[in-house]
Image 1: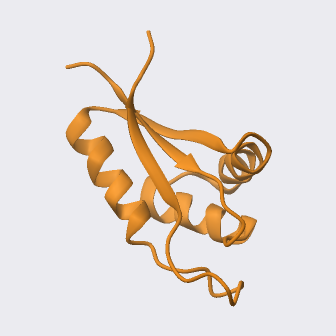
Image 2 (image 1 turned 135 degrees about the vertical axis):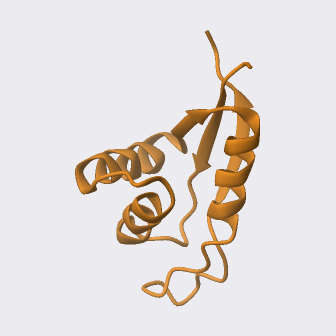
Length: 89
């Protein structure tokens, strides 16, 4: 089975704390890795948060979409966005 990336997309409606908490909750990423990924998505607009099979990648993308708004940012009305893309060799 070919691998797929789960790609988290940046927006202005979620805090670094939210991103780190979400990555720990959904993927089990430790604090340091979560902070590094939060910085990368902030600076580049996207970050690969996992590489796995298609079924698992779609599940993780859906979990990101269902995580909910950031309670620290009043204008945050929903979850962050993510995509599933084929992983490059």
